[in-house]
Length: 118
Image (cartoon, rainbow, N blue to C red; front, top):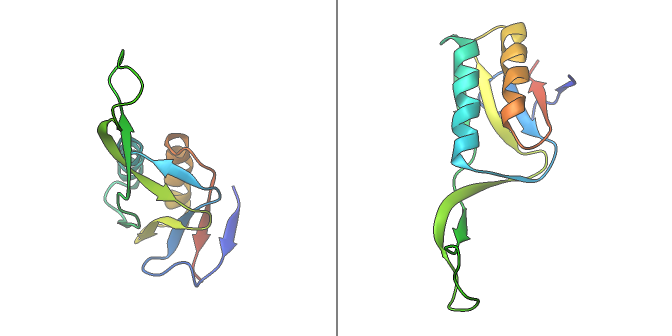
């Protein structure tokens, strides 16, 4: 895992997980990631989340003919851009946060890096 020292990106905490690719996140992926991170940190650190739902995902029912407009909103998604902070952490050791982030990367649909503040 690569760690970079880039202080302008880290605003509130000591460590920051940033995205290396553009991607969409759905709420189930975010909940699974947060659950894994909180399980590994065991209330040692504070977590900040830096996105909000901004893109609706629509779906038409099965066996519906073409036309007749757009489908109903299935869920809201989050558009994550490259080099955008996703989570920030403060209050735990680097090794504990590093381990929690490594476990949580399996739930994210994009590659990411962990940044830290000096």
